[in-house]
Image (cartoon, rainbow, N blue to C red; front, side, top):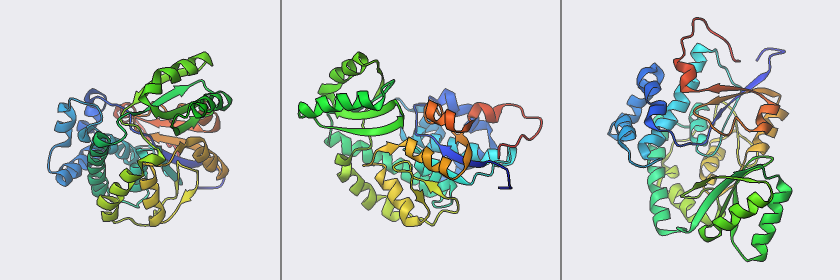
Length: 315
């Protein structure tokens, strides 16, 4: 980074439901995406695009791997097409796997294997455990209003955990399903906006047995290295600089709250002014707190497929 040039960070979004029609053209046409898809196919022993196209449910292994490919292919494409040279990287939730690859800590083929097998572990776990837990996302709810709702849950003796703190007024809360209607009513009565409900749930300390399984069966088999590019933790904003810390970052995604404002604060504290969101992002780079703090540059399949007569630098 030259003197006077604003620091740039690249962020990989949490996974969002993405039909094949959203990503398929990019995955079939973009040369970087095609190379990565070939590696993914060789790693898993089947066509990830065929599995993605034919899946009857959302968030299938084919869709998850294709989302990972898309995020990383866009980042690599931008290095050539837009002269992208970030000084920092991070991921939100699922995006930490892409961040581990981009930082140089994890080989892409291992990331593909991890993504597919992680999906299997999650499905097996929630088929037997916590079947009554869901994660509700909601906006327009500042912390004082959320505190009131949590106090009422405490008084009723109900279990809950905050899964994600996305912005000053945007949260994801895990509760027992029988409390879901009550929660939505409580949010609306305070001006809040209930949004989507996630099954299986995510990011709660009670899922520690799942973390243990993923550690034993998956992460212990990875060949992690110290990252070449510093990663900012989406759990508490700490800077991740060793293989051991990357290992913990990946595993703690099962049991720790995502605290996106903490990660953004760390970036701002290190002089980052530009945040490149690499991948299909409908949330993490769009909330007010991020857009007010940074010049947000979206990297999407549509951007990469657009005719580009000349190079336009983003970093």
